[in-house]
Image (cartoon, rainbow, N blue to C red):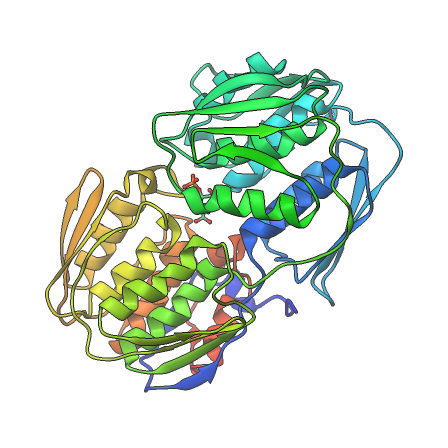
Length: 440
Ligand SMILES: O=C(O)C1=C[C@@H](OP(=O)(O)O)[C@@H](O)[C@H](O)C1
Ligand SMILES: C=C(OP(=O)(O)O)C(=O)O
């Protein structure tokens, strides 16, 4: 259940106090990626759907409100039960009169560009300052062969995006997979409502593959079959309708990562219920990386246990788990030796340039970091306190809160940015740490 708003979400900064070892069960909110997927699929299905255990955060709430502006469904949010009830209105999808604004919600914005292709009229979709720098060009090139005219208003490949819709016919297209998997997921999900079969070919390699697996798993769960040839082609046959009814969202593996990292850094034990070996969330495999660094883990069908130990550096390709790179970097700062995190170029186009941000902020804490275009080499040591800039990036705030649990004097600026994906983060951290305070 999502709790009441936390005053720290409005504070200028919070001081993180060091924590002794702990042994706790920690409940993590629902998966952001699954909540976004079920919202999109339910909206396209034309059937009443209840999304239970949903993440109710800035990103998913922006998405639910944006979907409603097309007029074909309502998305009723129940904070008491953490559920979203998607109900068809019987009206057609029409472009909203006002621009759609989604703040910093990248996945929703990318899903909405294709979705607007189904809505009669012209839709303008935009976001906050950082969102207006994030790349959309690959998706804009892939949509015209499917019948959808989508262009960047400023001609720079980034939002605001203008979509002339009502014309998502389907057919064959090619998408570049190197920048973001969200483009591929957007096309696959929205092909659900196309008049004709849709064939999607991936040019080059596909990054962040587990997220496409989550797309296919969510569609399968809702009764939609997607044909595939590995990660080369995906085919969505026309005329399929998602089943509607109830779906349940599992806990968010990226949100879980902060509590795994806390256990690793503090030589402690954490149990995360509700997520286990059957999960398609790629970020679950942070557990394997932490094991290689000296932790012990137990992963059953429905819970994950991690116990910290003396930490040693590893070399690791993190292309499949971009969102937990900052979490791993915090652990690396306390490990013996140099951890080489490679194949992470996509981090430069997230909520901030995360390679640069993690490098800068770890250096403030006295940690040696070598920054490469698509990698970070972090030499573990004895981090000291620092005031951490968070770049309006939830993952930077949560990562450095964890890094601050084993040293004095870490202050996190703009702690409210965690609301993008984990509005109860500070309260959840309190369950390990009752003395966390906002100082301003
Ligand atoms: O499809 C998704 O739900 C996501 C895909 C990933 O993005 P990229 O594919 O751009 O790496 C990830 O970083 C993001 O937080 C969520
Ligand atoms: C990159 C992220 O999200 P998005 O791309 O959906 O904004 C994230 O949550 O770390």
